[in-house]
Image (cartoon, rainbow, N blue to C red; front, side, top):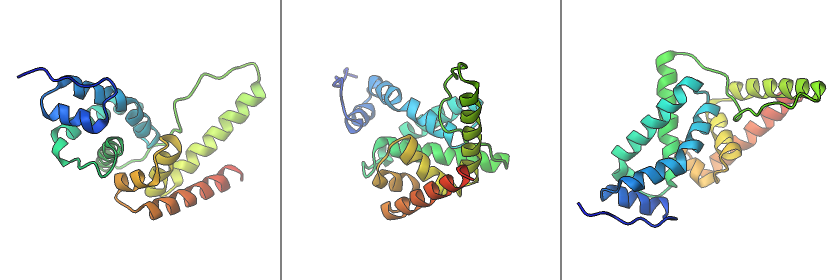
Length: 183
């Protein structure tokens, strides 16, 4: 097999073509490019911290195994998020339990202002509970939009809905979160 040259700033589509042609570097570049965002998404969607790495690994395994199924109608990242989200749903079904939904990686607090620390901890707790209580689709749309910054067409493709429905779910999620966090 001849070595394939992959440009340093290749698109996801070009990397996937190179992977299909046998480039291990292309696969490594795709994993490097998307693993962190996928891990944050899965963690925020309720995956246990101990399960995140396994879910990310399995999502990439399935994506690479079914590389021919990606038609570029959505971005590679949103397709990967859909695979990861489905794995997480399967895991939830198997375990028959739900977990609190963390918002993002937690930064170490600056303990110079205990009152601010307490207020931030209280706000975070209210937000976690409010996120957990959102309907699944609203929660996933909210996380993909607010945390990952995906546009509505990519969210719709990842979750099997329309961009208009994704907008509506996002609007309702924001409204419910505001109500829950300001009570």
